[in-house]
Length: 194
Ligand SMILES: Cc1ncc(COP(=O)(O)O)c(C=O)c1O
Image 1 (cartoon, helix red, strand yellow):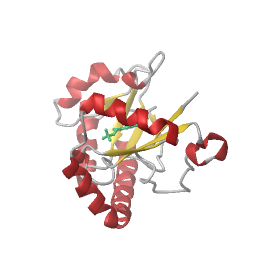
Image 2 (cartoon, protein in one colour; image 1 turned 120 degrees about the horizontal axis):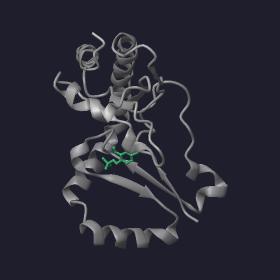
Image 3 (cartoon, rainbow, N blue to C red; image 1 turned 120 degrees about the vertical axis):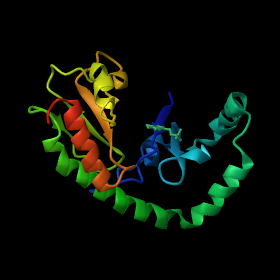
Image 4 (cartoon, rainbow, N blue to C red; image 1 turned 45 degrees about the vertical axis):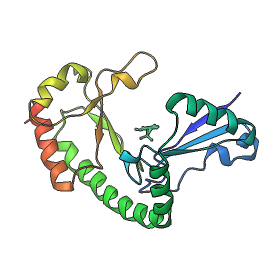
C-alpha cells in the first residue's frame, strides 16, 4: 500500500506548530509519496511542484509524468531553482500578509452571514470554511451572490459522500483586508443578510 501525502499548504501556517509530514515518520517513510507545490508560495503560473518518493518509485513516477505532459518546461524549472535562494524570506513575508487577511475575514464574518452560521478559524492555508443554516443551498444561491460582484466556492463538490449543501469556502489570501471587508459586505447583500 502506498500513502499519497498532498501538502501544498504546509508552509502557510499562521498559528501553532507545523504538523509533521507523514513521510517523516520512520514507519511510513518507505511507503509515502509526498507532494508539494510552488503554486501557493512562489507563483501559480509556473505550474511547478515537487514529489518526494522512495527511490524504487521515482522512475515510474517520471515515466508516468512524461506520458501525461511530456515535460515541465526547463525554463520554469530554472527560474524556480534560482528563486529557491530567497523563497524562505518570501514565504515569511507572505505568511504575515496572509495572517492579517485571515484575521480581517474572521473579524468581518459575523456581520456578513445569516444567524446560525458557523465557520472555522484556520491556523494555516488559504480558506475559511462556512456552514450556513441548513435551509441555505450554496450551489443554488451562487448566481444571486455573483450578481453582487463577489463569489465563493460551494462546498458540495468537496464531499466524497452525501454533501452538506449549506457549506461554502471563502479564500482570504488574494484580497487586501479592505477588499475582504467590501467583499463580505457584498456577500451579506447576496445572502439577503444586509
Ligand atoms: C489540496 C491541493 N493539492 C494540490 C493542489 C495543486 O496545486 P498546483 O496544481 O497549483 O500545484 C491544490 C491546488 O489548489 C490543492 O488545493
